[in-house]
Length: 182
Image 1: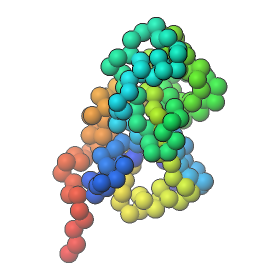
Image 2: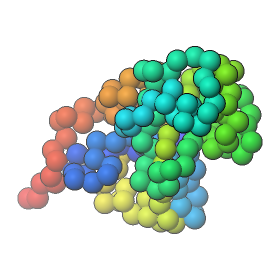
Image 3: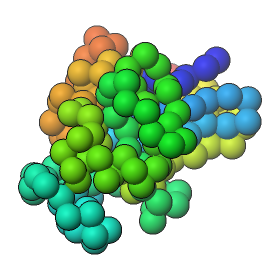
Image 4: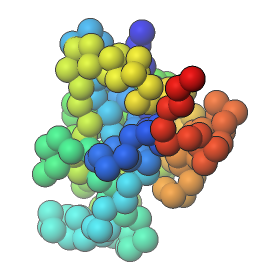
């Protein structure tokens, strides 16, 4: 099983947890583990604030473009998930047209209005050790579906989880939060 370029949809049974009601995009998955970015949880920081904190003097005002709370691991480390063919130092090509980087030069490009049009900046990431994600899926913690760039980059943050569920043909609001037994 390779879930690179897939969404993880938190099941309604996952309550009172960091991942409650989250949509996570899997950037890398192998026998050694998995790494992903939560893509539907805006933080309280805007891209403009982040760029100013880094003294990058943004050319454009990103007031309504939030930084994403990407996951509970390394929350002080930044990542940029973006669509396009731009190459930055340490870019990881996830699939045709979707890449991930942690390079400062990518933020500098955004600040100078030279970066990709479709992007999100995240602080932190989600990580799983080898076999851990597969175990969680077998215990019905997550639903999985191949990712669609439109959901990733075009949907409003608060609609991304439902949009990903629609790719599976389901409505998460109709899924019971507890498993039944007969």
